[in-house]
Length: 235
Figure 1: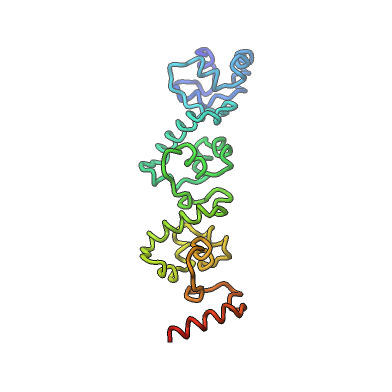
Figure 2: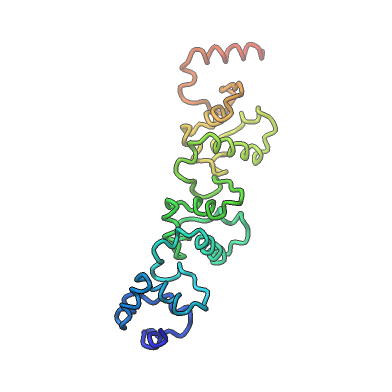
């Protein structure tokens, strides 16, 4: 390997240079059989040759097969990525996106988690408490679960400083869009009233008191009668 380091161009002068060595170069310099002894992987060959150096496998041109199945390697990569992105607090992970992985040798890890940055973060750092909706993209199907919807609305209630159930009548679409709830809103036909009444279905809501009611609400005579009775009591 030391001879190879001298014959390769550009010449290997630092440990970091080995990350850029390609399988083709080793084959061209008589190392084909040596590669075969190390699962045909440049990374495993270099690790075996220089075990004294703290290698980061994801930085090689080709990550060894099965590398991303190892949870310890996933954690090591994320700890390294955190430094590259200058993330200092748990909150910083909410800014992560797919480009961060692709630009920092983490495409394989992202693929393992269905191309979902939030899935990567919450799986690797599973001991932490996460608010999934705060990521740029939530996992597919996330808003289909009532538990997730309820957790989000309970959080939104605190953000908007709602003190009573009646405060929900002030909710509007902008509140959702400005607080990472667009996906939930779309699931309920972009109707804030439908979101609230569905998630907090245990309450007796008066839909007309919301800023907007869904399109066909007033087509139902029972709704008209309910409103008129409420209006009569108020007057």
